[in-house]
Length: 155
Image (cartoon, rainbow, N blue to C red; front, side):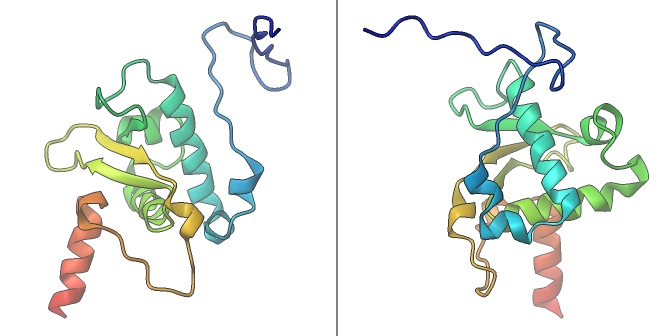
């Protein structure tokens, strides 16, 4: 008979041991995947930050979808210090890379409405093939990605 599962004890080298501290697992199968290996170092750090954000958000941005999380300039620039406010292109580049590699999808882009963008984690990274043209549904892109595609189509 199984007993009550013991709660994970944080170790001093991985946390400040605050009770409200959250963790975000990443599995070796993902880290060894072709998609992960193809990401830049900064895109990998952004993914890990998104994963942390996902677990630290108490209220999910889309009620009936538990795999969603928010990310905006206040978070990536001021809270996590990943990019400077002036380097929004760095954030856009890395988020586009995460979308193109199948790690996240953009549910709602907050650029036009000046609200938090809503993203959703995806398992499409398991099917990533760097030698094939990556097809991403336009509905899962950021506004910046859609503009780039329209610009290429016009040229």
